[in-house]
Image 1 (cartoon, rainbow, N blue to C red):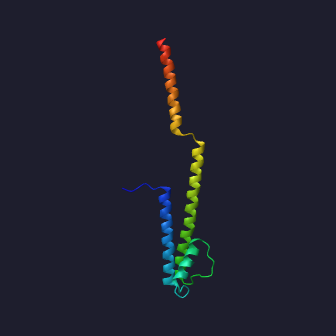
Image 2 (cartoon, helix red, strand yellow):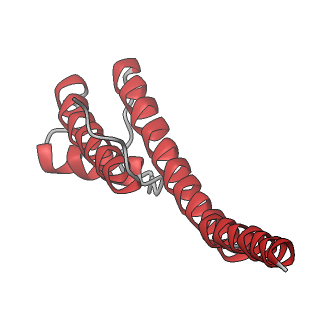
Image 3 (tube, one colour):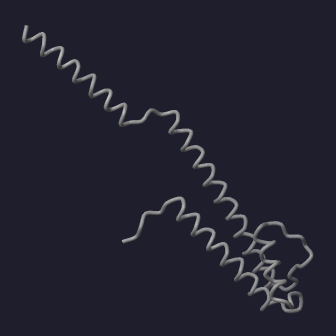
Length: 128
């Protein structure tokens, strides 16, 4: 059986996937465009700055294959930022909603107590 997806597990999955895309992008660009990326460390640095959308522009792929890899890494970076922003927003909205709405259990308990009080009053009238 699969465990239910929680915000913490989702964040972990997203960050692991982003890390893997960043590392794979760096290795792939190094393999595809050796003319521009002659050092693996430099290609990993390029991939990191690309996925974080910094993109200094000091190192850029010139071959089509390298540009496709760069586009994929860029899209992953944009998706990461979007998912993180959405998760933070959803958390803040949920917290605000919980502060505004009364707890359903306590509201239900209060309603049940009111019904019991009315029944007790009716029963005491009938006994008189």
